Image 1 (cartoon, helix red, strand yellow):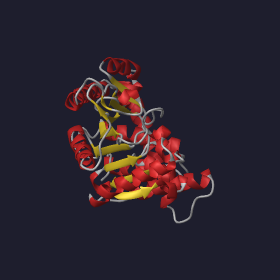
Image 2 (cartoon, helix red, strand yellow):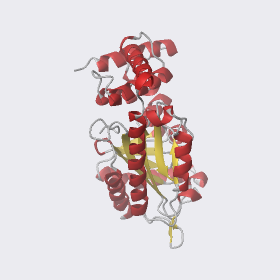
Image 3 (cartoon, helix red, strand yellow):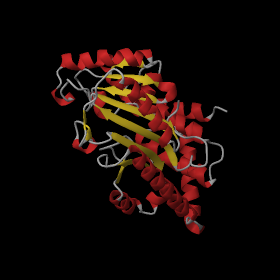
Length: 337
C-alpha cells in the first residue's frame, strides 16, 4: 500500500496519516541499557506472534546501509533505527501499511501509515497489532503514568499521531511560524518530512501530538482531526488569495519546473524535491494538467537516493551518475499512461 494520498477531496493538502504506539516489555531494561543478548531475545520472542499474523521479518543487522536507508525513505522506520548498531529488526505488513520496529528507542514501536486523512483507521490497525502482542507479553504500565516509555514525553498513551500535509500557499505567504506557535498552544507540533530533527522540504510538514499523558487516544485523534481540517481550510484560502500578477508569476515558475522535471538530463535529490513541490502545487491550482498526484507520489519514493540506487541494475558510481539515473526514472514514470 502506498503511504501517500493520490485521490479524494483532501489529496492536495493531506498526504498521509500515521499512528505509532510505543510499548516496552516487563522483565527487560529499556533499549538504552539492553545488551545484545536481551535485544536478540526480544526479537526472537516477538517473531512468533508476528510471523503467525503475516508480518515479514527484516533483520536490520543483515542489511546494507543503502537498503536500510530505503526503508527510511518509504517511512517504515526512523533514521535513528536505520543507523543503529545493536540488534534491531523490522516486521512489515506492507499491503496494510503496518510496521513494527523492535528495539528502536523502545522495545516496540507499532506503526500504521495510511494515505490521506485516516487517523482512526491507522489507530485501529496499530491497536489491533498491539492487542495481538499483548496476548503474549506483559507491557510496562503504571496506574499513575500509563505506559512506561524510554522518553518521558511518551508516557501515558505512548501514542504519536501525525499527518503529513502539503502546505505551499501557507509557506509562501510566511504563515508557518505563526501556525507552529498556534499548534504548540494546542499541544501539537510541526516537524519535517522525516520527523523529528529533519528539515522541512517540498512544503511538506508532519503535524503531530506532543501530549500523551493525561489524555485519551480518542481525545488526541479528535484534536488532531479538528486541527488538520482547520489547517486545510487555511491553506485553501491562502491559495485562493493568489491572484493577478502574483498568479501569473507563480504559473510561469511552476511550468518551468514542470519542464525541468520532464526534460532535464540530470536532477539532484534536493532539486527534485523543489520541482516535486512546484508541480504538485501546479496540479492543485489547475496549472499542470498532464501529471497526476499518483505519478508524483510514486516519484516521492522511487526518486529518493537509496531507493533509486537499489532499483538500478548497475549501481551508479558517483553523484552525477545517480542524478542522471534520477532524471531517467522521473521521465519513465511521467511518460507512463
